Image (cartoon, rainbow, N blue to C red; front, side, top):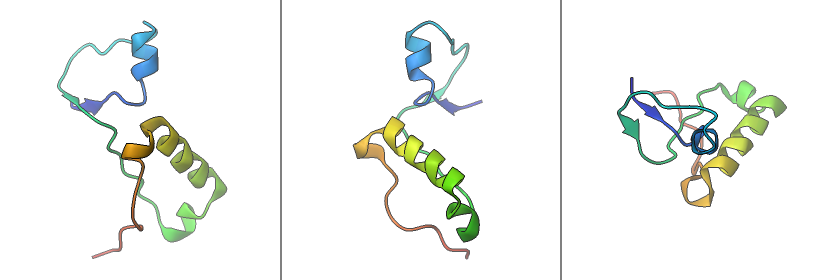
Length: 69
């Protein structure tokens, strides 16, 4: 299992969670996969905005949604 700890870092540093094994992906890379209709949902936008806040401005999502190939 490979994971990014960006979302759990505060809890790990506070001793509330532990990361028992590695490897760990450095950075705050994430993807939101949704249809255009779902992405327009207030709930999905709220999660997206929360992820941007947690990741910080340097790692915030950029660009337009991916298009099917």
